Image (tube, rainbow, N blue to C red; front, top):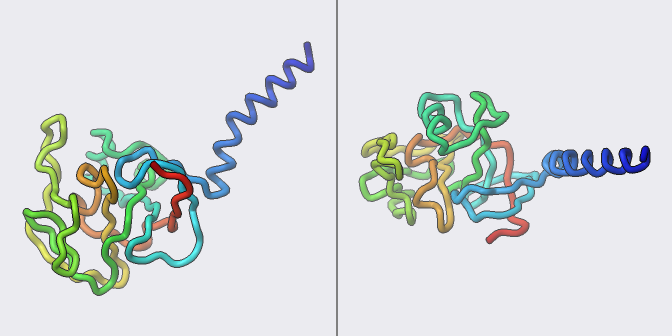
Amino acid sequence: MKRRRIAAAVCLFSVIAAPGAAHLAGLRINRSPSIPLGFYWLAGGEYGKGDFVVACPPVSPVYEMAKERGYINAGFCPGAYSTLMKRIEAVHGDTVAFAKEGVQVNGHLLPMSLAMSADPSKRPMPQLGDMEHVLGSSEVLLMGSGPGAAISFDSRYVGVFDRALILGKIRPLLTW
């Protein structure tokens, strides 16, 4: 009887501890349509245009609204926000334009970058209005990428991100 309890305790501990250990080791699971669903590895090294990254959102009223509406989850970032997984679409020196047609980088319209005026529940979405901005050395444009990019809560609603909010580059291991 005692051995069964010990075996059950070891199994339970393994089920609970294994995901935490995998996360600490660098495994990330994406369940958001912002980028392809699947398993990613938190990689070291520099990141740049075209890379997938994991970032903490800035503490702001827009992200408070996003958390309240369920666009992002609660998590361990400042503001009790979850991390975001997005693709870097523009970096220092790139010209980013937020317009009615969508988001442009250096004059090229990004696919599926049109900001929604309302969410599926008919609630108004934040709008940046028409603006153009040349990214500074500490700024990046983070956008959804892939089939779910059209509904991603990303830079089209909040503007550019500070590079200091990026926790690291992630590399796809298995996506679908």
